Image 1 (cartoon, rainbow, N blue to C red):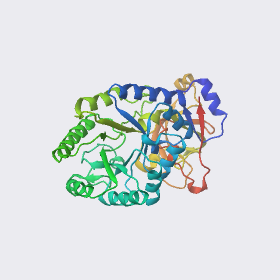
Image 2 (image 1 turned 90 degrees about the vertical axis):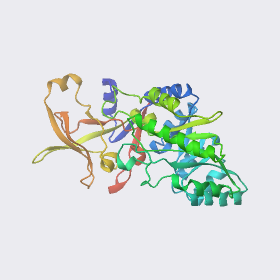
Image 3 (image 1 turned 180 degrees about the vertical axis):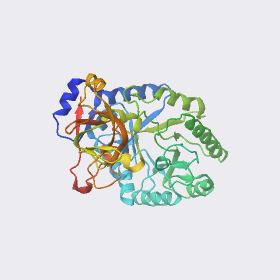
Image 4 (image 1 turned 120 degrees about the vertical axis):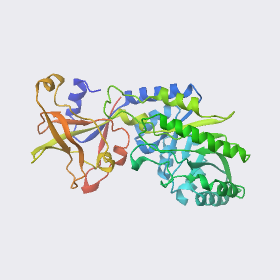
Length: 388
């Protein structure tokens, strides 16, 4: 991904910063659209992964919709000119203000996660004399086999309506005058690399659809969520998620009814590989059992490793490929400057001998990187640089 010309350019920019390769983004979007359109599947982008205006404008240009999990994400989608009929609003805790804003902008659908939420949206819609289109987010109790913090489809999770609540929900919908049920929504987790997990989801969705048909409820839309993982270990060898196998699996195992539309909400798989966090080595510190590379980027710029021990490939860009082959390699703990022991990007990282002032790249940070950054320790907000 980084040729010598790019590396020389990056060395001249004050660190830390996010570097986005927009050509990688475009190639990723092209692949996702090409593979999904083989089956007439509809793709929405999960804004929570990255809300950069530059990135959102490119995504919108591929006729991809917006999946939002907060009122401000809905506002962001509207401001970036996503069509209202392509905006979906999910989230377990929608406020009245957020719901009212979405109603005012006539979004495509609210993905509803509880009985009380259905009651609240109905009341607010009555006040505005509007009909709110809704999908029921069903908790299918399918294990995504990923980190416990990014698993969302089990009964122990806070998300979705449980299967044993369906009778109460359908009875309620008979009395809610300003709600229109247009579909079902599922999302079982994130960074899923075993596609058999999605086969299990399809089987469960088929069973739930049969339940609704048995109760004479026809559904126009099925939203199967997202969560498709990317390769954090080999970002250059496997730059793109396996969109072909992903969409083909749903085509093979999901029992789609006539005239029914199938929706996906991809985030990480679309933007992760186009982003890299660029940092500079402040100090090399010798410890008792390890040596530390102390960077000017920390958990304030990239939270994932501290939050759920996420792996990101770490590269020393100051070492050319030829000098790296000749130089000895050492194991370092690569850490940041934040006053927290959790501020660590990787332990026993194998790097060529590293020095103060070297430029370090933390790869595959286009998703859940910049968007989760903070000003903790009164840090300056991380900036972004784009390669067009």
